[in-house]
Amino acid sequence: MRDERVTFEGSTGAILAGRLRRPAGRPQGWAVLAHCFTCGKDLRAARLITDALAIEGYGVLRFDFTGLGESEGAFTETTFLSNVADLVTAARWLAEREGPVRLLVGHSLGGAAVVAAAKELPDVRGVVTIGAPFDPSHAAHILAPVRETLKTSGEAEIELAGRTLKVGQALLEDLERSSIEEDLANLGRPLLVLHAPFDTVVGIDHARDMFLAARHPKSFVSLDQADHLLTDRRDAAWVGSLIAAWADRTLDPPTADAPLAHGEVEAVVSSGFRTEIRAGHHRFVADEPPSLGGTDTGPTPYDLLLSSLGACTAMTLRMYADRKQWPLEEVIVTLRHERNHAKDCAGCAEGESVRLEVIHRTLDVVGDLSAEQRQRLLEIADRCPVHRTLHSQMEVRTTLSPNNG
Image (tube, rainbow, N blue to C red; front, top):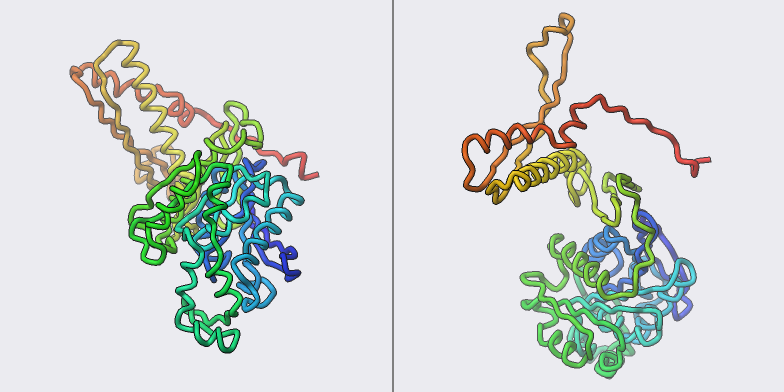
């Protein structure tokens, strides 16, 4: 997975800064993610949602709107409609560079913006909103403390999320007169509305109104205890996974690479330890815990090794019991890996230190089984193919890909 810094010209001519996340292998599809009001592309929730989509094979562009983050331009000159125009420009730029944008995802006011932008992007096949207002004028209440200053001076400074931003009167006026009700009714493509019932910034009533205004196909998912900005990393990652699962069933047939052949696995790492893995048509992630320099977004390589042995053991016992028609209801395999320095080694030279790799495997076989049947299943566990592979004389042959010249 690669995270590339990109720049492109926005709707007003300002140079906008973005990040383009590529998944392992050929993308399942391309998406544009619009951040919340006055936030930016580097908001942790935006990064985690991008990561989750990339795990499932989607390439994602997220960018700073004009006047925010690393993008050029004056925020005082931006409006809701200029944000919509920036979104359309970003999607067209991405389509020219990489391929058609199939998915638009918007957080908070960015959600209202992607609904409004969709009509300008015929290739888009799905729209997702996260904690979005049904009425963009809802965001105008944030400007209430400086409303009078805006009307008399044309611009004012306001503190938002610990930052001081200068806003213009045009933004207030645009928010107050903008509406996406007609855009929702005429969306003409699947809509997924994600909203937390206890969102204190944009109330759940907005999700209800959006859902009622849109025509089918449409879906709604309650985000349980999440807050508006998805500050809990688990909530943000969950949202990304939900979007990817919905997109897989909703969008046009995927454009991804053909599944790898049986027995082939591809692992791709770009920075840090986070590694995207493809096996067949499945995608998942491996990582290391923070204590070892990772980000803990997936199991460790040794976790995956234990998982392979555990799964193979359980499948082997299931197969054997079925063939024998034994009343085996469930198999639970618990594994633990450790490295020991052997204290006794008859074949070792004096003073030689020997490290012993040990996997502890515990079986819990559930069912009305006799003691003899349980003992036999214990013996069969050692015959599972992965167990035999681990005990065999394994040779790993490593070569450079022809792509390396």
